[in-house]
Length: 95
Image (cartoon, rainbow, N blue to C red; front, side, top):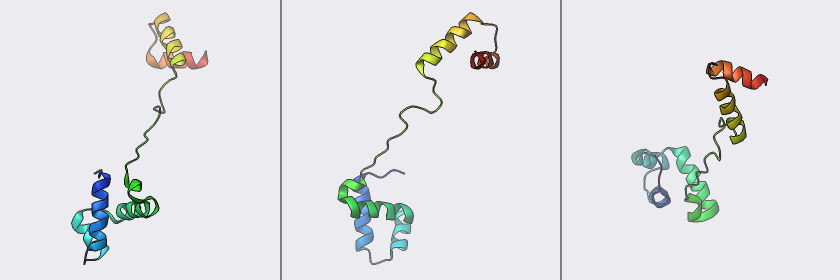
């Protein structure tokens, strides 16, 4: 589950002010200890800004063909329509 930065800050404050230990408090909240300590380290290093979600994701999928290669492959497939995809791949890689 992804938490918003406000929720992360609230969890940190709850753990800091709890009369229970960290483990028991996090167990009651349903938050894993490594996750909490990662948040807490970022919070101590950068303040509230460190709790923002920063998903970068892939810029380009690893298996996407470049546009020029894709165009040449489509051209070959149109020139020789009787080839199966496997035969087409073999012919393209050998050419």
